Structure formats: structure tokens, C-alpha cells
Image 1 (spheres, rainbow, N blue to C red):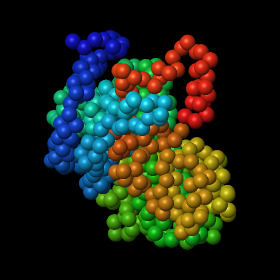
Image 2: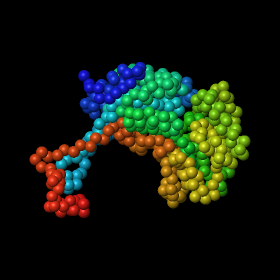
Image 3: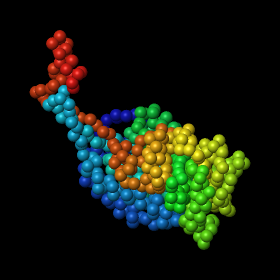
Amino acid sequence: MRPKMVETSTNSPYTTILEKQRDKSLLLRQQSIKSRKSQLKELEIFLLINRQRIQVAVNSDLKKSFMEVDLSELYPVLGEIRTAIENLDGWARSKKIDSPLTYFGSRAEIKIEPKGVCLIISPWNYPFNLCFGPLISCIAAGNTAIIKPSEMTPNTSKLISALASEFFEEAQVKVIEGDYTISSELLKLHFDHIFFTGSSTIGKVVMRAAAENLTSVTLELGGKSPTIVDETANLLTSAKRIVFGKFLNNGQTCVAPDYILIHRNVKDSFIEHLKKEVVKMFGDNGTINEDSKSYSRLINQKHFNRVTQLIKDSVAEGAVIELEGKSNEKVNFLHPTVLSNVSLNSSIMEEEIFGPVLPVITYNTEEEAINLINSKPKPLALYVFSERKSFQKKVLNQTSAGTTCINDCVIQFAHPNLPFGGVNNSGIGKSHGYAGFLEFSNQRPILKQLTRFSASSFIYPPFKPKMKLLVDMMLKYF
């Protein structure tokens, strides 16, 4: 019988499953790395078998085409699995640490061990990817997990619950569906780690709740990701890549370009390229409408109304509509919109847009663009389109962001060997690959000392005068 090492709320309806998972987590600590890899391989096969179920569920919630589901939801998760399988032996191996002369005779190492029972709260914008992605890191690190998917994508959440129950025993992975009240109940419990993806506002709520139990957190948040296009950039290529990154998933991407900072000399040419590429990429027969197969939808009417109001407010404050089209609130269809002459004090420049609206703002000098970026909270992503390495370096040295991509956008998220995460307001901690594995692991320092000899014995009290020479040498040389 496991001793009661931590307190949990006996009033919570989820106490029983938490206790089961805590017992299971103690067993998983003794599990071989080979068995973890074997389970991950089986999970890879299981997800591929269920590919069509995933496509149908996500399409039902967000109207994503099946191909977009494959590329943006399933493929990144399979990449996480394959990267973990290939590297898990090295990730989980204890690391030997060199010791200074003052620790002569001892041996030091860092043991990588599971944190224990974890809570994963996932969002609605990439409902499968951003749920199973962290879960792969959690499982690879040897933990158990309770998952709370978003109620705003009910079909995908229902499928996630079904897939988890079909593949895992609930003592290892359990999905609990419901609204924000379920999240509130779960956050009262004592977890060993919490992984949350969502808005900065809710991230603060999660962090406050975690502080009550001194639980470590990974917060994948968001913010206004700026995109600089200078006068040396290849405008056609830049427009094409920005259009993909911005309007994929109807702009509901945490690392989507939120606004463009374009050098005044190339603004008009760049906007023309933007308009052509939007229709070329997401339209059918030269137009984008509610039947377009490559264009997703906004998540719900509330979100549709919020984004639409941002456009109206911007226009009322002097913004010029460069690109728009017919929209249909009944099916949450909002045509891609490009705005210029946007006021820096407008609401669209204060909050994350999270929709298919792209403000284009001109600048005259490099300092002007950099100062604007630095006047706002640190973003999750920052993009630079420029052929000048000196300018690229200047932006990197004079700004701060969770991630940065030069001459492309969004694709840094899916790189299997790059850590992903924000900084300050845009997030805490990193995910993906080795970084994600470490988020769900405790790096436990271990020092092994010889029984017959210890260098530290030379500095034991009593502190006699003859010891002063030794202390002086330590302070000066070691």
C-alpha cells in the first residue's frame, strides 16, 4: 500500500482517479525505457489506423479539410512520437557530471525521472495536435495524465476520450470532458505538473491554482506575433508564406502573423501580392466563399462576432479595407480581410486577433519597427522577412520572443528538434522533442561519496587557525 505522501481534496469527484494514477505513476517509475518505446510505437500504429476518425471529428468542429487535418493535427503528433522513440534512450539516460578538485573522490550525475501525475488542459484551435502532442512528451517521460480537452470542439473532444479509453488504461491516461467548471475542479487537486495551452488570461488562473500546491507548470500562451517585411525582402515569396501562416485554420493559430510591419517603400506592391496569394491559396475558381474546401471556419458565433467587431472598430478609426468579401455568421464564415492605415491605438492592435484579419502597418526606419515591437508584451513568435543579414541580426539582438523564424513563418512550430514556447506573457516553459520530455521530467542531482575518504572532511569544524590557509586557497583557486 502506498503511503499518503500528498493531500488531495476528498470532496472532489476526481479524487479516486487521481489516486489510481498516483499508484500507477509509482509503478511507471520502475518501467524500462524499452517498454515506453514499445507503447509509443503501438500508439503510432493506433493513431494511423484511426486517421479517418480524427479527420471527421476535427472537420466537424472547424471545417478543416481532411488534408489540413492530416498536416496540422496528425502529422505533428506522429513526428513527436517518432522523435521520442528514436531518442528516448539518450534522453532518459543519467548524465555524468564533472566534479571540481574540491569534490575529489566523489561521483556526480543527474538522474532523469518522471514527475508523476500530470494534468493536460488543451485548447480548441488545434484540438487533436495540442492535446496529443503534450501527451506524447508526458508518456515518454514515464508519467500518468488526466486530460481536459476543450468543450468548444465537442466532436474532437469526444473522439479524444474514446481513443484514450481504447488505448490506455485509465490509471495511466484519463480524459475528462466538460466546460470550465471541470477545469476549475481539476485545478484544485495536487498534480505533479500542469501543462496548459490557451490564452494569457486563463494562463494566469492556472498559474495561481498551481501555486497553491507548488505545482510546476508549462504555459503555452499566445500574444500578438509581429512580422517585419523590409525593402529587401522577396515580396512574392514573403506574401505567399505569410498568407499560408496567417490564414491557415482561419487565422486561429497561436503563432500566426498577427500584424505586418512593412517598409513604406514596398507597401503597395506587397499588399497586391497578398491579395492575389490569398485567393490563389484558399479560393476555388478565383473566389473564397463558404464552400471553399481549403478554408476553415471560425470556431463559433461568439468568436465570429468578436473578430467582426474588431474590423468595424478599426474602420471607424480610419483603417482602409484592402481585401474583404462576403461573410456568413450562420456558419461562422469570415472572408480573409487585409487592413491598412490601422491606428496603433485601436483594439485590433491591443488584443490577439485569432482570426482571418491581417493589419498592415508601415514604418520608415528600422528603429521605428523595433520600438513598436518592444512597446508590446513579448510575443510567442516573431517573423523577419529580409535579405539583409545585418538587419536580421539587429532584430534578434534588440527584441525578445518565444520563437523566431526568418524568411518564413509558422513552420518553426513543427520542427521536431526545436523547443517551442513563449517568454513572459506569451508563455512559461518549452515543449516538443527533448524540451517537452524535460518539462515532464525531474532532473534529480545525485552525488555519490566514497566511504573511506571525503575531501569535505578537511573543512569540518572546529575551525582552527591552520585551516585558514586551506580556506584561502579554496577561495582563490578552486
